[in-house]
Image 1: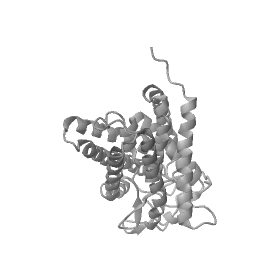
Image 2 (image 1 turned 180 degrees about the vertical axis):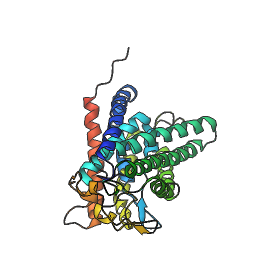
Image 3 (image 1 turned 90 degrees about the vertical axis):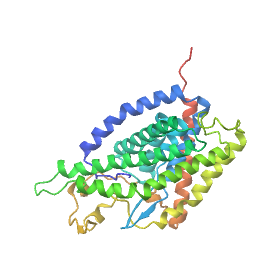
Image 4 (image 1 turned 120 degrees about the vertical axis):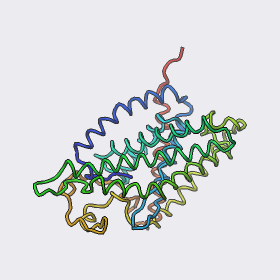
Length: 339
């Protein structure tokens, strides 16, 4: 679901980026008001969960791949505004260091995965949780919210793709950016997310929540942890970092999925890429002559190392950066005065 560079026009990127600016400002304001300062470093752990979840690619019949995001999970743990901020920082790390998602498309990727996903997923979660009273209602509601959230985010990405060939073409009528209109982009994006990728989001969200409940992890908010005894902070920290370490070691499993996620092909691949049995036959000019950014570790690889080791080192670097960023932020962000 990471929109690459030059799939969206600069105009589209500017509009969606402008929409996200007040959202980010409100997210910072809400985090300062709602998240206690001692809890702010935990946002980095939540962002690390999101970062690592997106490294586990899942193959879809037909040669494309996708992944979970964990946006609803983070919204449940910290609230949707904090999730928006944490996921945005995770997406920034992915784009700058690993080339996963475009720099110009950063606002669009944040709109889909850091705004639409956590807010819609959290809304479904809250609505179901109010109406259910069984012992497993939290996990059921979380799973439903996760499924709804990732599919709404995928739909937004499909619409952003699909509008490009309708608005931006050259004199010969060829698309300048993403060449696939709504009637191709929406079914193609939704096929994977309504099935395997949506299921992956449900499994990741509910599995992590179940693990945190079982280990009494301090990440859980009081509303989610109400049936549990007061957690032991030291034991909780060990449990959380053990889970992060397990995810890091397992990230090379994402390399087993062959193919590229739909809508994330390199420009060189696009001309020969078959969609609905027909190859495009040309490379859109906006991609050929568009913005170019060289990431430090493209596609989570490290020069001179086998891909599996590069994946693990990239996972360590990304998770560590996110934890450190929010640790530093917790010491810099002052809580508003309460009277």
